Image 1 (cartoon, helix red, strand yellow):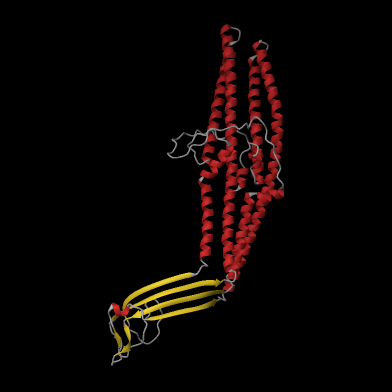
Image 2 (cartoon, rainbow, N blue to C red):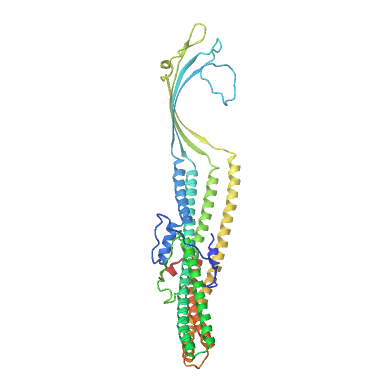
Length: 477
């Protein structure tokens, strides 16, 4: 999954989203419990260890490492041992035939023609063949397999980084939803306190009856806001638990003082971003792997020198002598045919060069070099997109910082307005409509400040995701 999928996450706020109720399920047997409370570093650690997609990438790295060992063993001396014992006829006729399903016979043609007598024969062979000189093919093959390991590792690192960015964003969204619940509960408490005072005033005749009805309506609205906030918080917690690989567990978040201070946003240099970004490293390793494959194909043009050594023995029930009619003397007993009678050995070297491979390998190398050019173009495209995303992230951080710094002034003014409106209403100098408007303004200001703080943390995360490092975020926790 591309990093740009994460970067397109909604920037609309924490109180928007689908109002879906997710039913609880029984915790599966044997599934480890999540830490309670769960910090962001712990969430990242759990996600990396438990999520199936990351485990699959780890398996791909181990498979590539196993391929390296397999590739190296292909250039070791090949030792072949063969032993056989047969009971067969030994008839021969003059003339050639094309070997296929039929097996060849060893021996001379008898003067009196074939017969149906059988005899035992045996064979034992020890052969050693070693590609001693490959003219660079071994090194090219090893480089190709090692490049595949590096590419698999880079893909794993990219997947881990992108997934950590998703988990961190889900954590901040869930944390923001939890904060929204707390703010709506505080708003509900204010509405309840005011409703008690208004009901008492209505019963005593100090307040008009419409104030009691209006207070009841505002109280019901505050309860609905609490329910909606809880619903959204539960949805975000369930999403976070799913990203942690344990969707049936209830997540308890640790705020880690996210709302007590604002994060410091740093700017990564573009050259550092290119050098350390996991996504670009993955694309760079694909270029290296493609070039290594081209080198291996080019090495196939060269000859190979194999060293050979073999020793074998044979036994047969057909004797060397013939009778007076010219027939071979055949002893059909196992004791006459199975023991070895003749021994041979061979030591030598073979130089093999397939001349037509020049044409085939040359075209294959040309095609692979075009694939390398494609990989380089993909790398340049990703680098351009990441640079654009990084610039956009810096603008988002700047905007989020300005909003977060301006939000406290709005909150202070809203609190002052609410205090004054409540005092004037209690003194009978203002009506309930003014107090209701002040209450709504206070609730909105509290929500805006919490949202501004959370958005600044998410902007820092966005900048780290575009820059290729989450250290700027995690280093402040």
